[in-house]
Image (cartoon, rainbow, N blue to C red; front, side, top):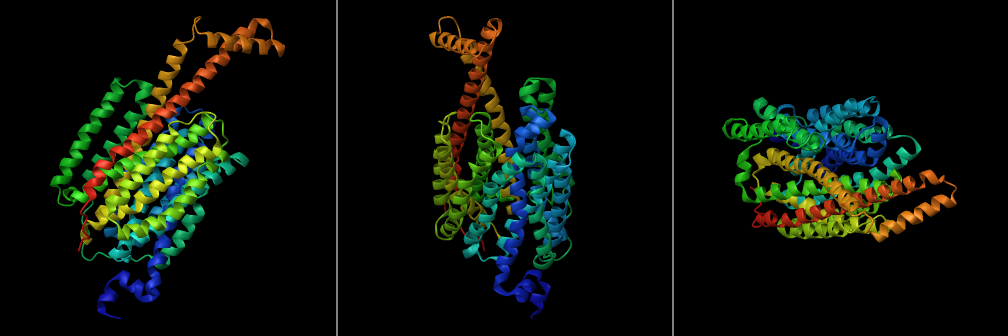
Length: 521
């Protein structure tokens, strides 16, 4: 063994395990990604039950998704520093242990505040683990095989949200929602055991750069105040003092973060990355991609449970075919990534997903299960072509020294988009639903023959059922109110899906910036 091999922990691993080491370490980091993605998406199936347990409103319940995404977003930029300071193995193990502790805290939570804290710590750990996984793949695979590797790695990533909601629905229906917090623990245990064997230690020589505490503080305050303002604006009023203060602080800290990162010698996020045209285009697409994928994943289970009356198990099952198809598409897309310009597969995938969202914007209470599932499958095929090309195309345009920060930055943009997407789509859904309910209510007057006929029919049914005459009319009006509420909610969901479709079409513009990508030396 040469002295260089002895000095390089990754070379030492290749000497010990041979070429198979690439796939062994990929499987290792895949376990953690499966655990984090599973936990990020499975909560959507459990939301109605959690809302019932703690008496949450929609605005508070969405914090269970956005708190996870916000914490994940904030810590993704820590990945490059943590790996440089502590090494891949120590960083991975520490993050997994925090994730496990937070999972137990969530499963045993006795208040909504404790549940939200658990989601924050889960998201914080996930934010370290996901960029680390991508970084490992780019360290052990040569440039011409990275697309294929991302495709294989993506199978595990997509199987988690495909199977997770279904398994979570079964657990909720037969036990209760608390058990969904424990479903990722077997993957965490396997990942910890494998990390002790396959993950290398610190690969950076020399003293590590100092931690950017000021940048991290500014970014944390920016994310907290911005997402808090978005989450509570509908309930407290968009022009209320507290919401305006949140947005003002977010603007100041966001601008302060950019200015600080430009001047500090050891930035948490090197803004020089965005001088690269290809990386900038990929970052914008990634932001929109995150908004659409997380937003639609939030909307679909909520739609089928609240509008179509599905059980949690059925809500999970409707996502399963799409996930299984996506698992088959990913390896194909990965191979295409190594042979086709990134912008070609990315734009194709964006168009296909936009078509899926456009179809979903026509769904109603009577849309059959397999029709809905088919529309979702179309969208996931599109995502299958976007993800490997987007990640590989972005990082291929960087130098080897920039891969650590680039991996964290591209994941940061996806999660930031996801946090914005869930919040803004939730706001849009609530506002549009209220608009439609109000419009439908205003149309219910004496001149509306259809309404009068409906009220007569319902009153007659109550009479046949033996309901006292004194409350028949009130009962008919109550039924009409519930019909209008359901119809308004359905129309609100339609508008939300339509917005997702438009977002993905808009993403075609920055996707074209990814042309002329070059492989970094």
